[in-house]
Structures are given as structure tokens and as C-alpha cells.
Image (cartoon, rainbow, N blue to C red):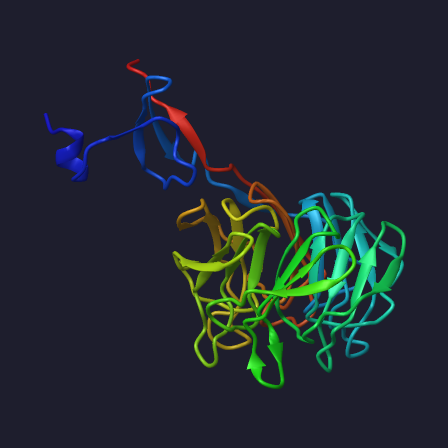
Length: 332
């Protein structure tokens, strides 16, 4: 009978504590608990149709901590270049609530359905920031660098948010990273690669940036933020820009939709990040880009967007998945 080393080319590692960022298929022996363990994804997730937004739009922003608790705001609509319309989602219906003070599209969005932050965006590349308290939007201090289509991190809060990358007509793609503390934006260390139309996940001390456009190529690059610096990690399986992502963490994130070649060529591809690498999951029902998003890697929402044939969508899709987990092996 072949041994594990003969099959895998390495021995089972003996460690005092479980690894913090295992990859799928990794096996180790925990010498503290005297247990043999491994890491795998127990089941694939899937997308299902949700409620329809009141205003069809693309290039909107989103916030929210699950698939059934979301806020969608701003965007590009058929009747005018941009909108300040804001809608709240309860898992069944979208309800119109108070508008943004400054209409815009391609904004950054973070936080929850009752405590959100909207910042940057277009047209004209804005530096404006607004905070949502569950009822109204209030203008607060501006970004230091005006830009649009940036990546964001700030799960479930509007007082600790990270904005990174994006586009400004001069000089173009941005690597700038700014930290919001609830009152002011502060510039911190830049990304390794300047890019636009990327997505982000996580919190201000542990974030993930993925995808985007590095003129001219479409990017699969992924960078991890530790609160001080960005580090390049494993690439997405499918390079794309105008990508959307769940907001949870830097070790468990979901990437979905986006553009893979031309603006009309949207993708339904969905990938799950386990802290070390991306793995393909079940696709969206409808390929889309430029959408809003909410939620986690196990409960995410995607709403609005551009399908490639329809420039303004009102559809919502809800992701239900299983978070990667450590399993214990037995002799039975």
C-alpha cells in the first residue's frame, strides 16, 4: 500500500496548533490535541433569484452583512446619467428610502444596511463622502484623492473603512490607499499594482483586493492588506474587471461577475478565496458586471448591474454557500 508521502511527495506535518490559512486538501497532525486533521470545502454553494429592485441600474454601490440585509445606492440609470436613489433590502423586497445628497455612479460602498459609507465615484471623478445612519445620508469629510471604481473594505461598519485603487483622469489608474476612521480619510501605504474597477473584502486591518484593470490588460491579481502593507498573493482563476465581491474578510471571500474581455462580455464566474487560493464555484444565473453587493462568503447578494445585453438590471441574486472548514479524521 502506498504511503501518504509516496502519494503527496511530503510527510504529514506535525504542528502544535492548526494552521491559520490552510489550503484545500492540506492534512496535518495536531500534537496538542493528538488529532489528525484536514481542510476542505464541505459543499458547493449556489445562487438563487431574490427580489427585484425598484430602479434598474448599473454602476451602483452596495453595503450589507448578508444576502437578506443590503443597501443599494447611486448608479447609472436610463432616465438620467446618474442617480442618488437608495434602496433597502430585507431578503424579500426592496424599499425606496432617502436619496444620497450627491447623485453618482461608480462609487465605493461599505458597511451595513443601517450604517453605510458612500465615497468617491463619478461622473467627473468625485471626492465626496456620505454616511448613512439607517434613515438619512449626511455629507462628511472628503477623500484626499478623488477617484472612482475603487476597491473597498469595511464589513458591517461605516466608521472603519478602507478605499484603494481606482481611477482618476490624471494620472489614470491609482494605487492610493486611504483609511476612514469615522471622521477623516488618511493616506496609508499604496497597493503594489495601480488598477481600476477592482473589488475588495475585509476590514481595515485585514483586507483583500482582487481583479481590476491594469491598462491595458485585465487583471487576476490579488493583494492582501495586513493593516500596514499590501502583499501579492495567489491570482484569481479568471482575470476580470468591474468585478464584485462579498465584504466579509481577507481569509474567506467570494468574487463574482465582472468583465472578461470587452464591456459587453460579462461573466457569471464565481470564485471562493480560502486565505491562500481561489477555487471556482457554481456560476451566477445571469452573467453581470458593474453591480452592487452585500454579505459574506456564505451569504452574499448581487443586485443591479449590466448583463452585456441589458445595460440596466434590477435583478437580485442570493448566494448560499458553505465556508471552508477544518475536518477531523477518524479511524472509522
